[in-house]
Length: 612
Image 1 (cartoon, rainbow, N blue to C red):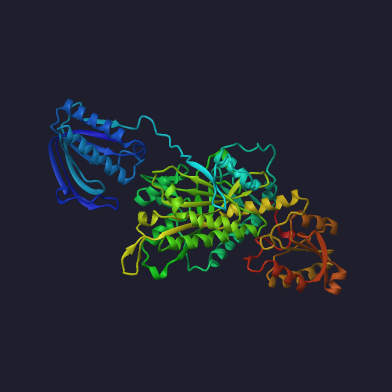
Image 2: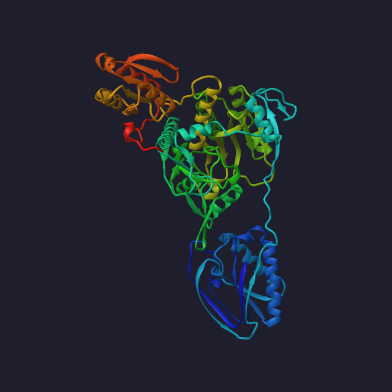
């Protein structure tokens, strides 16, 4: 808190107009005048919120001491936001001003307070003696270090047995690794070599941006194509859930002067990415929550329209420690395919929670991977209320779950949150998908719907990212390919996601027109086709196509031009097969059915491509 003291013959003010953060005041507070007063112009700063009582006590002690020294008969507290660029939230500032007013009054001093958040006219006449103008700076003696409460852990089996984490036997390798990491806090085996997936990141042009902040990624054309295809895929999944979906788009920063934003940010934790512009502080969104909730509070909703979903692929920001960032997996800027499902009550929320859980597991199984469940619970009460639903999930999946009970008494906005973990090639449990029941933010942001008797009710909101962030889904795809290689197989990507699905290799310049003709035909059928029109030998062209991980590779020479039959290398099977262009198109169409499609993000001919 910063202060400017004026020992004044008089001070008077008139509240003219409210600002958006103004406190509500009774009529007498719209104007005021004091004579023979110590006027304290006060700016409450963000650091004061770490220990507001300590700052208030220090300021009140100093104001009383200064008033006695200068012989002031009264004190006027005047909120004045112009002494600092690092302001507290309006709620904190108003609360601290009121506390100071009460404390000074309790000490027997006549005190008056001008209202917070109003445009005010004022006049003051300073006495002009050596102590009539003084400045002060009050701050907490030590910023309190926030400690993340660990809570307690249990393992729940599909049979309903609750087992201590050190007594449980069995479970998959991923499950045991997750228990060791999350519950037993065991350090994993140190990785002494570069993670193998990074080789594929380089291959597809997925990289860190050296000219940005730590943890920000960049994508050259192949990586950008893969990114956009995954975003399209995530959107398709949401539209396939059988729920009415509202697609939205919004901004990525929200003012901490807005009380719901401040409260939600405080609950999120210590990884907030903040931006200051002038006197305002903004939090960079860490999911699509703020934007969607800011919209929903203005929607006129009825119970007949629930449940429904709101969806955005939202650029999100988390201030991860610079030494812990990990390409694709742990970044400071991430992209969240964030779905919020608005439900009228808890039974409806639980039914849709089960729907989302089923789809989350199905998406990972489609990649040949399996999830293990870490179930976070805000309290024992939340566990008892959701126990039957949780057991139903475990019985359906046929596997245990690790339960994490958060400490009792904290005002969490959620009741149950499931993290879905895979075991990656480095033998580390990695969280990818998530789903959560939110019971607090509808009230916090003022989101309501009309019930069956027209009463206003707050909905239950589910948060989910079915495939995780775009980056983490790409991480899973690349990690899966690396695991194929470790098993002695040819690593490959799903055909719908492979940047170059087919590459044609004309034997010589004379065969280029035929290759162009085949490429045109297949592009019309929805296939991404590249042509190696270089003067390299066929052998070198084949090797380059395989190094580039093209799903299919076909040579175009005299025989192919005459017969129309192509000898096609199929990467996923690591073998050749003869087929004509229409047959190849049908095969690729079958493999990519229901998946998104985009054209190449670079020229078709290799001779026209720059080196990245």
